[in-house]
Image (cartoon, rainbow, N blue to C red):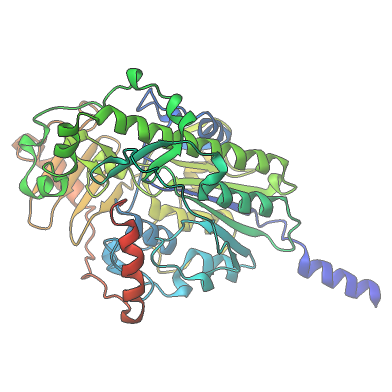
Length: 464
């Protein structure tokens, strides 16, 4: 009888052999300036590049929304902004997405221990009850000393006399390192949400020194780039805002240096995390998904930040490492968006895939990156503004009917808008078939939480 009881206890407490653990790494505001993508030769990301070499790296991966809050809400719910009504940062996603529709709920229902730290959802709207354990106090950021410049207008950057561990991201990674080293009774889902390279690009000076100012090159730029962009696109670009102020300041290269420095700091954190992964007793049965929440403009098209539907704002890294499925140093050139993350994780981990999901599993691409795939990436910014991205084309359709069309093969920086050229009407029509048909109105906020959220948003508004 004792032997039977012991065996039953073991069955309850031992992780299921067919359920891999998940290390879920989210990076904030990291665009395609990572070494392995080759888009920018100035970036220094050896640790992210090594992670990419462990499995499948996607060269055409796109956010569901080029804004923190709706991008993360879409990924974590598997539903696009048009379905939830969550389009921007000032909306509380929680009333629109009940707990039972989240990625964390699917894993908890599947018998996983679900824990995390840092920025997974937008910081203003946390719902800790979605987690079995979550880091409560991640710390803050060192301040820029009085008299030292903190950037140009809303674009914040400064090289600081501080240590790596003075930033909150260091402690977020520490939490995850501790979890990787612990014995676990259940399979685990561990989320690591790193803030950098989100502004402010205030990191230790040694990361600025890795990118000497006299070596900094500006991104590819065409002075009259917005001349063929329709009014709706120009309105999103806001060329008279951040970019005009940056040009006036003469500090464009300094801002680029700041972003590169913050990316290099982030890369250091990934190196620490992967070292712990390699030492972890769970390594052999732990899958990794690494993703950025959206891209970032640094002056291309007279635009800064995200908040647009072009390549720079919508493209972000995506890396998968799945023991027994992915092969090292694999490259997938298919276009995917991040609504695929939820269904792929449930597929890979042998969990039921909820019916409400709008994305498709890309497990077939993880097994064979060259396999057939006919689903384009779709990105939404605001009500009824969408971009459809295939391997060869980007089509943008705005709510007012304005359009943009770019041949990505011959025009990778999207300098020539072909939307009005009649010879491409057939191409445009084919791409338009993939525009979302569900465009629900903007979701209302939970009034009891709205005041609290607005206070938090005031702290981050300048940074966003």
